Amino acid sequence: MRFIDLHTHSQASDGTDSPAQLVAGAAAAGLAAVALTDHDTLSGLDEAEAAAQRHGIEFLRGCELSTRTEYGEMHILGLWLPRQADALEQRLADIRHKRDNRNAHILEKLATLGISISMDELQHEAQGESVGRPHIAALLVKKGAVPDMETAFREYLGSGGRAYLPKEVLEPEEAVRLMAGLGATVSLAHPCLKPLPPDWLEAFVLRLKACGLSAIEAYHSEHSDAAIRSCVDLARRLDLGLSGGSDYHGRNKPRIRLGHGYGGLRVPLDILEDLKARRRQQGLPC
Image (cartoon, rainbow, N blue to C red; front, side, top):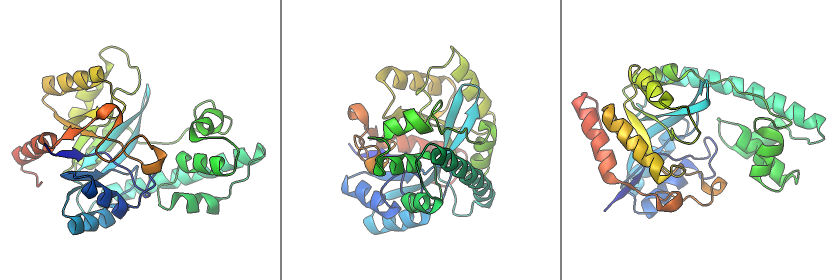
């Protein structure tokens, strides 16, 4: 049986592999296909796609967008994004500008706490255009302010931390419409990572399906077996496709390998073939 990974991150957002290294790693792992789905940026896709051609592995152009709900953030994945995605690129540039302002204010808060991090240091750490709290956390570890990333978020950067600031993100309907309007397969990422009121998730998915949502990411490193079964059942009842991936971040999530999530997670090639069949039914390219 062959396997795939439709949820990965590179240095273009908060991973540690370059896009080319990530694709080479996926090929070396024997994966049939890999998608690059960096947070709020498409900047690594061309490099990754060129590497996929060299290594003979199927590649899906993707992106992961953060959105706001009454129960916190929910993430939306787009797969099969086109090379020309001007509307999405423009919106992402606006999001990154707001995030840069937020980063600057977080660094100011850290300075008042006696921790000096410059914007130049932060940009060098990120090595990409999508710069955020994981990069600040890494610098806090490097400077000896905290022993690890988890402590950085708990004490400084997470909700309730001493330097925390909320970020501006898209509304979920806008995120889905943006990517569906480009012909992407749009999936709700890891929907079971936080407790939600009974029936809320189904109502939320129905709202997004009306905007173009076409799949649910059932298979994810942090989904329990019960969560996977729940997502599979929900997708079947609502006639949505299934997606899955490791959420690989390189050294930032050392227990996750490309194509291998926590608990022995593997995503079979059949998942991708079903998504392709659904796209063909809609007259969309694969």
